Length: 115
Length: 113
Image 1 (cartoon, one colour):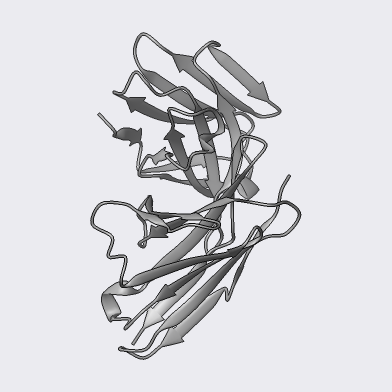
Image 2: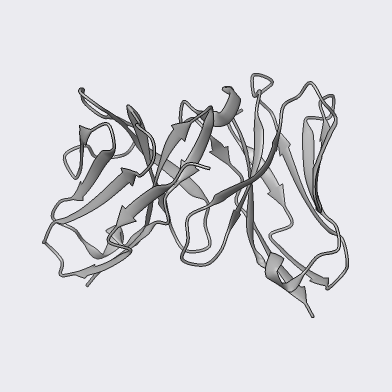
């Protein structure tokens, strides 16, 4: 019940295209769903996050879609750029902000945006 | 956003030696910090929670005598890998909460020869 399943494992997108990464969870106690971006040799950085009381959140080119009944959420990157090439992790936590440290991470998706 | 730093960014050591990794919150105080380990092409796994003024709490399967954690002040937590072995080679990342959000450090690459 603690797992967060992420797909695909890797993704190649042309510049200007839409990148879509999906995650699914089982634990209905999860209350906070962040996405992290990690460049090689660096720590993860919070990209965008959502709580289950909304179905969509948009920040610039990044959008989270959330389906509470299906227990799924996804990250959409519009107008993908080569600079977006990184590994993306979804996560879930029963605490808002994951401030208790109990973030459960997906296995990550390596995104490559081709020029 | 809040900034978390780590030192060193990478370290190479011989098997059997101990290595200390520092995690600092630069512009905020953190009574709690978290240590994660990330193997190549894998996800982050929480190792332990560092608590200022009290003992760290470890996740199941993490040896507390091998991974010593000291939360020396409200801005500093240290992780010491004792008697390191090649299987301890990994990317170690700390994080600290601020304003309800987890902020991660840049990580420390440990290679044990």
